[in-house]
Amino acid sequence: MDSVYGADDQHYTIDLQGGDRYSSIRQEIDATTQGPGSPPVFGGDQKWIEPVIGARGMWRLNEQWTGIASLEFGGFGFRWK
Image 1 (tube, rainbow, N blue to C red):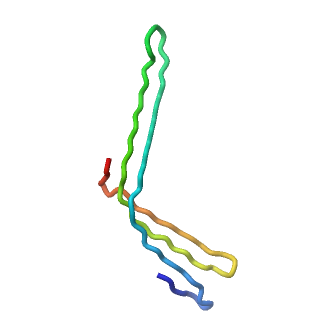
Image 2: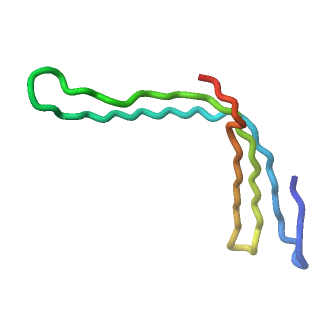
Image 3: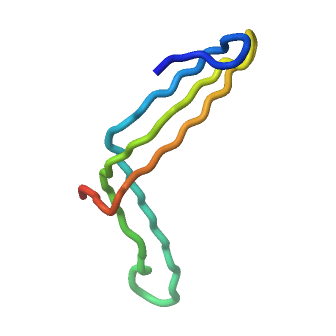
């Protein structure tokens, strides 16, 4: 959506967004122990895809400056693993 505001007819744009977000987390903790044997390793991997919706706005403040803001919401209690 493109439009104008103010006495100088400054331009602004608002875009709606939607899609999927892929996330991957890997954590690993090595512990050292005295004595024979391999030290234990703790941690694991997690990967998932979640739905995301959002909006982005751009406002032309004057000839040299533009303001941009973005907002996203994701997850909604639903994940593909």
